[in-house]
Amino acid sequence: MARITSSKPATHEREEDLHQAITNNQADWQRRAFDEYHQLVHGLLSKTLGPRAEIADLVGDVFVIFFANAQRIRQASAVRSYLVSITMNVARRELRTRRRRALLHTLIGWPRDADRDVSPDDPKAKAALLQLSRIVEELSPNERAAFVLHTLENMPVAEVASALGVSESTAKRRVRRANEHILKRVRRNALLADYLVARSGPSHAG
Amino acid sequence: MPVRRAPPTQQQVTEAFRALADEHAREREPLDKRRAWYALQYESRMPRAAMHNARVRWALAVTVFALGILVGAPAWQAWTKLRYDAHGLATEGSNLRAGDVPAGLAFSDGSRVMVSPRSRLSVEFVGKHSALTRLIDGRLHVAVHHEPDTNYRFLAGPYEVQVVGTEFDLEWRAQAEGFTLVMQSGEVRVLGEGSARRVSAGQTLRLPGQRPPAAEPTKAVPSSSARQPPVAASVVASVRPVSKAANVLDQQSAGGVAASARSDWRELLDSGQFSAIVRDADARGNEGVLSTAPASDLRVLALAARYTGRRALSLRAWQALRDRYATEARTQGAAFFLGRCYEEQGDGAQALHWLVRYLSESPSGAFAGEALGHRFLLLSKSGQRAEAASSAREYLERYPRGAYAKSARIVAQPE
Image (cartoon, rainbow over all chains, first blue to last red):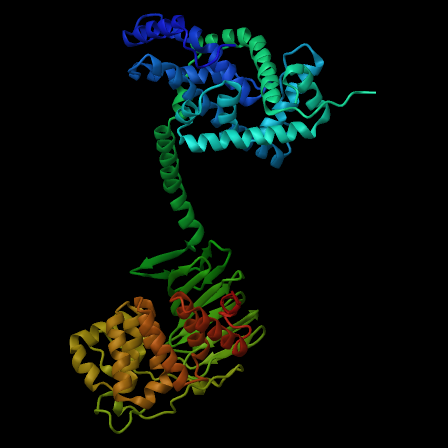
């Protein structure tokens, strides 16, 4: 999967080209933007909301907001970060909605929303991903967003802060707390810890 | 035997997690992409996105709130206010008059009042279960539905019947038999001249309808009423039938309003013609009346002015009674009525002052319970919680089953 921060000239050229198309309101700019950034948006939402989330509608929400406001973007380099910002806001809103819905369902005794299957064919990988997702679910929406952007997407702290609309120190603190929490919880689960060590290979042990 | 590895490092966890999440996202992405683009193209997504706009949400919230007020306010008013349906009653100014056949009032709280032919009355609402009915002349059969805050009051001439929940017949003939109360169930409290009386189921209370005004003290300026033969100041009350001879009325005709002399004010008051009294006083000049009228006329004028909403005149009449006839003022409860007038005007401080004064002058007076009740309510309303609680406890000690007992228990509770 493509990382958010990419300095490849080809990517840069494509971004410039797309920005030009948006600014000139070319006929196919929406489709081009969708093709260019769908993987990014989908990945962010999938990692933030967990592997079992239904995210096709949320991806649509992100692009509806993006299409409505894209022509106000002045610089080509800002397109991607603007989209990341929208995606994380939608993800956080969805997390809050889920919490409210879960509370309501508990109160009125309805069953939980049906989950979709997790993708990896390897049963161990599937189980590990589910367990990691459950650990991530224990984080607050803000900590989860910071963790996904910085730890899973390798985004620099300054960009994380910008995307989430907080100061760098706040972003750093959220990332640190999230990492500490996840590491602590993984170490308590011997099977999961062993699997992650084995998967990461002998060179990282220690 | 499984080999136990060293605990994973942060980097190992991160890399494994990232690999797993990427693998999952990669597998899902093509299918989700098709679905998302289809939804974007063929479904109207804008309204959903618009719902997330803060401005739209605020506008919706304000609209819903405004609609709630529009629909809820009349419903709230209807729920909190007592209403009645009148059957067979014709309006006569602000009064109701029954024709030649029995009529009735059906209140929204389930209370019923049957009105005998040719009776006259007026009804004012005070709260959800509170109403003030003035029986000007005639006979009523009353069945009051009991609720914790029920407070029905019936004024008949100089008498007042306070009801919480009960059934009785009430008759008032200013020109003939006077006041007759026949209790069928429950208990009522009758206020009037003299001390308050409790009348229970099966009892009958008859009180005189009209009597000549009391003789005025010698210091009073001579007036037409002073020429009336003196009688005892207190009304004879009993819960057994009194002889008709004792209730023989002064047959003096009330006459027209314009021709009424000051000595007729009592008759006008007894027959409910409060406006006539006030108009007569206005015609004579209020200043002159207040400075020269005898004590009985000042009291009648003060009551009539209060009933017609002329609170300022009522206050001045009570004040004149206190200034000029201190003893009579005390026995008539002028301080209590001053307090109530100020309370009705919204002047809590003055109301409290006069109620406290009444209680110090007449600790066991006819209106002591009312005064104590209003005192703790006023104190509570003005935020003097400790004093209100103490006053409420005093009320409960003296009137544990009084009309204000429920409120007193609430106010007396420690915080």
